Amino acid sequence: MSAIVTLKKGEGRTIKAGGAWIYDNEIDTIMGSFENGDIIIVKDFDGYPMGKGFINQNSKIRIRMMTRHADQDIDTEFLRMRVQNAWNYRKTTVDTSSCRVVFGEADFLPGLVIDKYEDVLVVECLALGMEQFKETIVSLLKEVLSEDGISIRGVYERSDANERKKEGLAKVKGFIGEEFDTNVEIVENGVHYMVDVVNGQKTGFFLDQKYNRLAMQRICKGKKVLDCFTHMGTFALNAGIAGATEVTGLDISEYAVQQAEANAKLNHLEDTVHFRCANVLDELPKLAAAGEKYDVVILDPPAFTKSKEATKNAIKGYREINMKGLKLVKDGGYLATCSCSHFMTQELLAKTVKEAAKAAHKRIRQVEFRTQAPDHPILWAADESYYLKFYIFQVVEEM
Image (cartoon, rainbow, N blue to C red; front, side):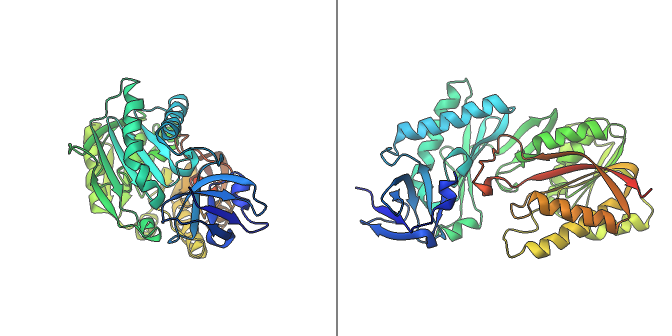
């Protein structure tokens, strides 16, 4: 028999609105015995059943909801339904050759991320309660994919994020099942990449910018482009393949630059797309001092903030980087700028870019606002699923 958690009166606002989390301070009583990671039943203060989730007393997020039906068994059939729904949704909304197949809470499988790179799966598990289901879900996903004629040659686990510590979990990295060659060639928007699922950032590649990179192809044709924080060269290579005349990609990581150069060769773009190792914040003023100007500047910085508390400093960072970037854009040129931090809201980013434009004496006209690709669905009321904000502006001198 599952333990029963009863909420305090007036609490549970997040899950009542459609979210997936219950925090430690929202709980009134726990009846029955349980171990961390166990599935428990959640009831409102008046005994109204609210569903089932898994509990972890190591975490401030005390319960993550698995279902809104308190009588639902969390068994193989239930997990198969979740996996099938996730895959059906991707088939409808994105190019599935490489995509995120499971996106945690937004796919009602809290704490679990599974990315598909061609015929390889990469798994990241960030919640203790999900550990017990992880391997079952992987084998169910392989079955679901094989029904569509997709044969998975290997699965690799990248549960090496710091968030695991908050759950009382050790970091894990390694093969699930047979070993295989972990360098995978993928094609996205017509660009080829070698993805190193063992050493790459997070699960190996940032799939969430897929359609934002595609949107830049139209703008970069015939242009001189600067791609800052290029990582594996993704925006730079999209610019190159679209017919940009000259592209420079900057990244502070020597390893990222080597990967980006290899990717340029893979696409026969090494003559027009060049990369170099540099600290972007230092490099941009040097380029400005040297009189450099670009038709298109792309700013795709790492998350300057991972917490609410650090947001003030992050705003400074985003303001500075946008100001420096704007100064390098030719009159009538374009700036693409984004934030992948959940705490840097759309309103906050807009305000920050506006301040940067004012400080740089530039006027900006919004071309479009975009967000993460649809394989990273945004579950309304589960705010943590919405994190990527992406603006394209035209930059004009003050009239």
